[in-house]
Length: 84
Image 1 (cartoon, one colour):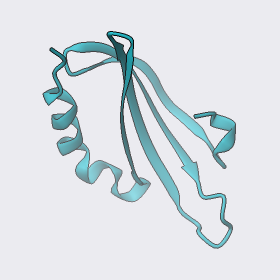
Image 2 (image 1 turned 135 degrees about the horizontal axis):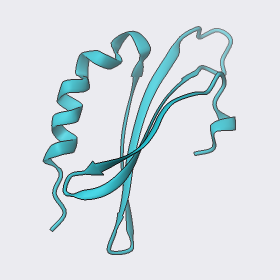
Image 3 (image 1 turned 90 degrees about the horizontal axis):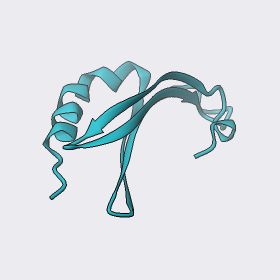
Image 4 (image 1 turned 180 degrees about the vertical axis):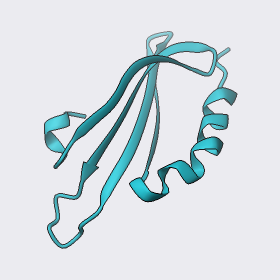
């Protein structure tokens, strides 16, 4: 994805992080709706890695006000991923 495609894009975090048992990369960001009739801001987290020539991506997106509610479950899911 290209950041310029998202209205009000704001990069919050850009770090290395494992995806399961493989080193990956994580970005955390917020963005608004391109539709003026929908006034809300979304928060997103994308973590990706490349293993054996294949790209694996895990994404979590929610309204900013709800993002932290399911974050513990999402983090548990990320930790449970394993590449054999």
